[in-house]
Image (cartoon, rainbow, N blue to C red; front, side):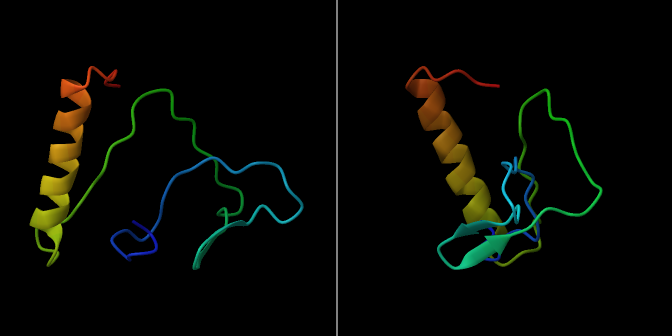
Length: 76
């Protein structure tokens, strides 16, 4: 979602490394200095209804969640 510029930031764990930079394909993620979050629950997606691809993204996420439920995957 970051590499497709559908989101401006992502919350994710950073593993201990010298640089704390996470590289994947064409993106490079860096932690925000002096900021840490504790997530003891589920993760959620926030999307804008005004974004040109908002409806398409919402449908894709909804379809994916439905498929997970049908497959018996645990829902957080």
